[in-house]
Amino acid sequence: MKPKIIVYKKVDQSVLEYLQNTCNVVYFEQLDSLNYPEFFQELKDAQGILGSGLQVNKDFLDRAPQLKIVCNASVGHDNLDLTELSKRGIMATNTPDVLNDTVADTIMGLILSTARRMPELDQLVKAGQWGSKNEEKWFGLDVHHKVLGIIGMGGIGSDIAKRAHFGFDMNILYHNRSRNNEAEQKYGATYCSLEDLLRQSDFVCLMTPLTPQTEKLIGKREFELMKKTAIFINGSRGKTVDEEALYHALKTGEIYAAGLDVFVEEPIKKDNPLLTLENVVTLPHIGSATYETRLKMAMLAAENLVVGLRGETPPNQIKSGVIA
Image 1 (cartoon, rainbow, N blue to C red):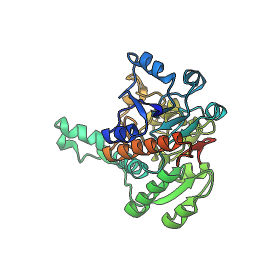
Image 2 (image 1 turned 180 degrees about the horizontal axis):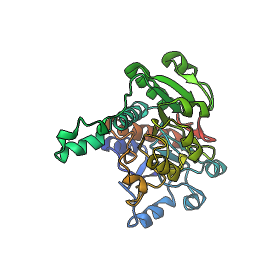
Image 3 (image 1 turned 90 degrees about the vertical axis):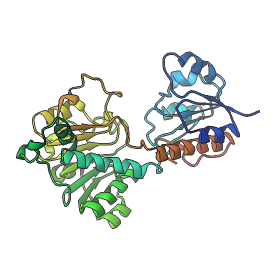
Image 4 (image 1 turned 135 degrees about the vertical axis):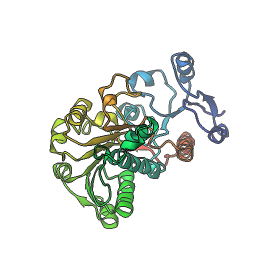
């Protein structure tokens, strides 16, 4: 008998067909208040689940006594209680690496659009105010030959460094839990303390995973250390930043601008004060959102699931918060 699995996000038909070859697939394109009862009913005898964002904690796992594997179609896995999963002998996987280039492209887009104020100027032209485009008040900042500080020099951070170094002649500083010798050799990246990075960088790019150690890593003190002309980019998780402190830094001119793909609460509330500021470029957590990359992520998650249900070790099993 084929093992029963639940796919709880929209995936390409090719992914479903791959899974159906070996599994009995229950498919939800999305979860909402209307189909939650049906989802939890199906969960009672499911051996695997595939999706992203669902909080898999003790209460959830108590409703899934047959579960053997949880597969995130994302690189982030802060939605998973890894301690509880390990205690119950349930495997957890994610999809690293396949999205690195796409997310790095998005981050470079945020750097350019904030520095050159592209969203503001786009609205200016559409409002029929072309004549004011050369006024000094609309000038932006150069990106080329500036200092880019990357907090979190993993796979995505390295691909950002590559684009910045070779494409824009930027000098790269980085802060990480450990040295990244490859980034140092290939992109001239310089390892430094977090404080030195914040003081010296023209662009501060946060790319760390969300852990107890990185929650609110960047707050009031950190923004005070940055240059007044600094631009802050967050492509990690919203909770790695103190949003109130970020709003204050932007509102008072403590830093120049920010480009954000993530927020503490998602979707962001309409009354979030960050949305009132012109010097913030906001994206809806869409860093990896291209058709090609999302297909690769979903297929990798599916491959992890199939391998795990065969009783083998999936290629991207997560252990103790890191990729095995």
